[in-house]
Length: 375
Length: 137
Image (cartoon, rainbow over all chains, first blue to last red):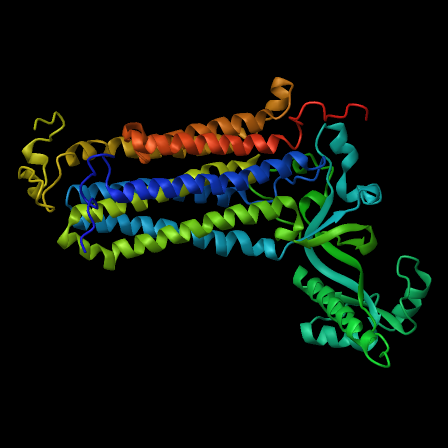
């Protein structure tokens, strides 16, 4: 069946069908992203002083990706113009470059931008414990300079101490392939646990084990193990007669190789974010953080903060749009380009509406980039 | 049909020389040469967007609050630059500058509703219902 007005304009609207369609779709997209941005405004304005982080994202990568996206917006227009001029080889060239740009944007995001965050540890400290960690937060100086206070100690998770049943912890270490670090090693830990008020023994026979960590996921695994055993205990309590509960392992402290901002919080260099992120000092002294002083800890993932949850939500949805655009472009460059032989104007219209979508994706990024990376 | 932008035959693609036949999809449409004429502008807008991306990044490291002795100036200036860039993309790349009124009508409604959405967010701070605001904190 021949659909009318896919090439010629409808006399009443003066537009071909797909153009009306894409603009209605883009209008709904404005509402979708509008909702997410209003959530961003709501959460950011509602955040307590110091609870909206700055300088956690990689600005050079973000800037580079912005350039890529702008360049691809120009190339997709050139592809459309080439089709309008009936220059097929030129169309293939510009569309090919657009596809490469879109794919590069996604590759940079997924290979260089997100993975380091998944392995970066952050502990947001309880407000009444900020003074205790002042050597790493430097809030007196921040206050003096009229800057927002720091609430977080972040860096590479070097190790963590766990109390629990010796056999359970040894099995956990074996499964995760985690070495036990010297110093507070098991055995000696029982005495340590009995005397240190910060490490109350949960049950007789509990030991404290100091595990090395490769990433925050190792600590997450321990929390998951504890949750699984708590869940198991609910079932055990319902048995007739009830089975004795399993012991619950618990993290008592973290050892963090600090980011420069926590290593030298008073350094003028570290007071404000910089364009080029400072690399952490490999010889820094690890910071020991008591788990009971932490409000919550996690990798730089959505559950870290409202900042990262909105960041991953909005840039993730934007990334899916980029992926969608690239897939459509691949179709129009490859199998879809066969339409050129039959009706080049129809293909030009398809490229135009796909391009309109692509410009919208660029437009969203123009707001996303400063809101999350810079301001 | 007279087109002031028609390029000289020497610079024209071989296919483009034929007069436009509306029933021949392979013929170069009459508006094509005008579109080609805009190519330089598209590139120019791309370069402006590049430059203003650099400006956005640079401005974010300037302490405007200190300069103007106020609050939120970096955000206001950053959003003003972003809005300018977005207007360029919409007007030139998305052809809204010369787009039909049908599309503008969709967009008026969209802008109205998205403005309403942002206003609703304000209600988290401002109580719009008279007589329900409690002042005695």
